[in-house]
Image (cartoon, rainbow, N blue to C red):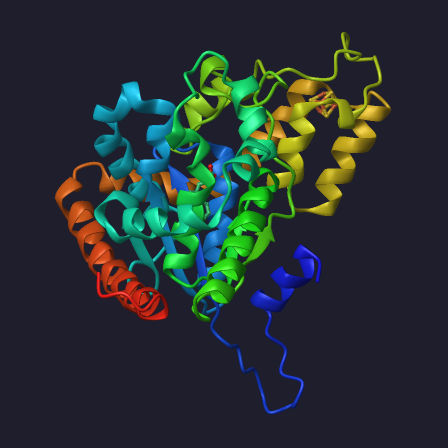
Length: 352
Ligand code: TRP
Ligand code: SF4
């Protein structure tokens, strides 16, 4: 099954027997690292998370603060604040703590325990050959990624997923290797010991990764991202100077949307086909200016984000309420984690 099919299977469980909609609940899990406030790329992911929640699945969404440690140890004192802000964004984007378990990785110590056990089921050379391992080392050459912790990053991720016996993991393209490794580890565990873990499927986003406002990869070090929590004013300040197709120096120069990061944002945020056509034709035939094009994007983004902004500001003075929500989520996650750890230990015939 391709990831699109898996996604459709999860979103629309079709009842082939004809007795009505028998939406079977799937266990879904995903997380974001606490390396800062969330941007529009994260927002698209959150829409997907919400869609899976609203389709009636059994969702676990968390903040991966131990994962953030691998590359951002010097900022660890900010993690608590960032985690709080990230959970506020989760809630503002419509994740509902009454239906979905929202929690923080470091609060569930079982993740560390399972991580330790699973690390015995994977070879060092397999980890060193992970494409993400090499890529990140090259990309983040300004950071010290020589630690064993960084090499073991995907094993911790496997522990996150397997801890909740997740069947579906919504992720970006770049994380597919990690889910592949998670499946291998699950198979390994199930054969060496006893059948405990389902093999999780990646659920990929339909949209390609959003580029930064300068057309390069979105990155903290380039300051080229748009935060979800921006208001209309700062949103326009980010959009107006955005890089466009360099061929369109003047308004009468025709351009190619495929060479323009603004178009990538339209693909994600401009839903109406008519409007998309207006952009493509207008750009190629030089009928519109780049500012007109950005203005449309701005309008669509503003419409989409307005309710999120409203909720974000209503949480501004509510740190204690949000902390309580996190506590309650942690409690639910912990129960589920403890249940898995019991199964794990019984499969391994240990009394730890
Ligand atoms: N590695 C993921 C990322 O960088 C974050 C993550 C940690 C995660 N644990 C996870 C995602 C478990 C899905 C499932 O985006
Ligand atoms: Fe980019 Fe739009 Fe300008 Fe075309 S018209 S180059 S898509 S901003």
